[in-house]
Length: 502
Image (cartoon, rainbow, N blue to C red):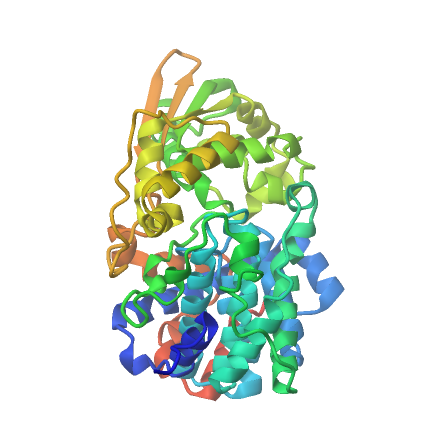
């Protein structure tokens, strides 16, 4: 009996043969919204002072060199933390930006472009999920882009599956990882995904030239999962190929910033409306006595890690994107949170900073357990791990975030899902604001706007169209891209160029 092959061989064989004919329409529709969202994030980056510096250093995202274009796009979409997430990872920097960069070079039609995005999503999400109970998650899991960029380019160029395997074997041979001091304390974060993507695209060139990668790079005792995962989840890489679509776990960003702030910002926007209606005007710092954000362990840990770097308007944008205090204050006073809140007069608004120091964050066990049992960010991984191993890992993670899981409470993680059609990402929040007249105002959100869940499945296209338009995209471009499946190569190339024109 012949061997079924290594993990990368099985994954590459499936992805190389992937056709839209076998992808459910609901999954394709999510991928179209993912493209619109990522283009909106790129436009927001281009309009920000950091984006100006990126273009000054590396050029525009629509130049003649697709490798350079992919690098620039990833930096632009990273700089305001305005990208989307799946179970597991922040994939779009590579899985969407790489096909955008190679579309004109390869003459991709809209259908071929979507195949590249979907193949890259599914491969990168699965490898990231297999290592998610480990040292790196979210945007720090830069290995997502090693997998995503190799897959996206290999699919776009219609490479045979053995070249995918060599590309991954080479790219994953030296996985990058960021240092918190640089990631939160400087502008270095904006290039983090770009560097990984460059490594991946070089690995494809190396594979095409005949260099060989280790086919068992993922599962070998001295390989990728052994090095990066505390609890390696080997079976997650190939489980349910063609049936369990990780693209269905997409959570879309409607605010610039870490996804763990989204529910608190939703609450702050709702509170703004209510308080402004009572006052007959927008609230100011003089109206707000204190704000308490009750949040799950993910939000508490994120805010704790970033707090020392949030020193005022001159703080790095990367740290501001993680700050509960700053983002909740801005949303409560302005009634929105938009890219303009991260530069210029709005960032320097003294009223926002006076309000930000009145924000405290408290761990909420109910919200924590809800967030741990939904699909993302780690609920499905805990189900894959199962039993005592998952509980032990969870307790250690909570401890590192300054929280404690009550030992008397046992979570039933259940069994791995056979489908992600009903995936959820419920990182909720309850925000209580007390105004100076003594009135207590409260709002709660279970599943944030845009996060994976029933409301997002119904409204993701409208939400992401609005994101693209609100960041300066034209209605003509949005109309064309919503029809992505049917675009010819020339129509797709011109639509993507127009979508990135500022």
